[in-house]
Image (cartoon, rainbow, N blue to C red; front, side):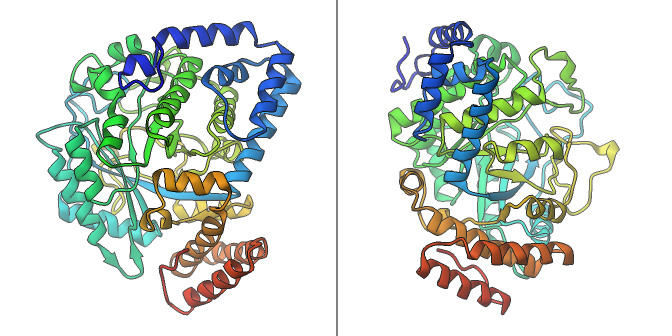
Length: 472
């Protein structure tokens, strides 16, 4: 029986409730009166239910679909403005004991090169990332209790935070590792991580178990209940995600919104981020073998509907997607993107030779970080390297309260501009610097609070004079 407050996976992600929602959505995809009422509710910018979101995704009315797209843009602008947070993944190890059928790290793949970074190699990779201008990393590792124990992850986090190179420093480490225990989540919290990220892959239990035939990840309940254990362990910023293409996109949309509703109902705070990757080519993985792959048009609508359903949650799109696709979804809801990424184990110091391929998936957007920053500036966005909220304790419900009240803009806007200024001074090409300086001057004028504006202007001048790491 569906119960969003339950701690049991099959009760807060209830298949019968999802099936009823899918049926309801299909029956009402042309119900103008109902769809208009859902859009009217969504305009309050307080979110909509999983069932209402399903109706919007199924909607086949041209005018209403235009309204859905426009509303997504309004909500994105209201809560996140034109700031786009930048990050990069760092793959520590591709050793894995699981048998996931969609991932080249699966245990039975005998020809992929298995690699694991030493602490010295991690140091060199981090210096290379700092020299690009990155301040925020997402740590990635396969599940292997022998090769990748929690002690290795914790030591790696300590190494990353310890490295100060020229004006570079990684100020925030997010962690994407396999579901683990409350005790281990406490250790990750004490290590100072930002967000704990775990992709559900698919919310359909039957599909999930087929796609994960062997290994600890086969346990649907243990995996799906991981965010509850993370929060019990004191990590109050968690990131959800599904891999679109494994099951039907409508099932996954309903499932991920139900998961967000569950976290809100049980802990009083929903997910900090939602990621929306699509299955793509990787070593021995062919997307054509998965019949639920989705078109660009459907992908864009999914982003818009998630933005409407969970207005306060950050949304992430990776370099799996092409430059053109990323451009389209930026104003529909995406607030974080990666840049200059490598999905191999290492690869930032020196690009991995093709014959040593250890990548988890192929990249569609292979531009450098500076090229991505330049592109964002041309589009009118503010590339942000801000990590202030985490270091100021504005996490979990404290962050969400500020966001929902609209007060967060007094922190986010100036922090974005100051971290952009740091990037321009230390790492940018001349063309990027010229465009960035123009954006900073333009955006300073948009700040309405005179005290914040004056202080931000002062800090930006101090950055030009060589000082670093100012934050509101």
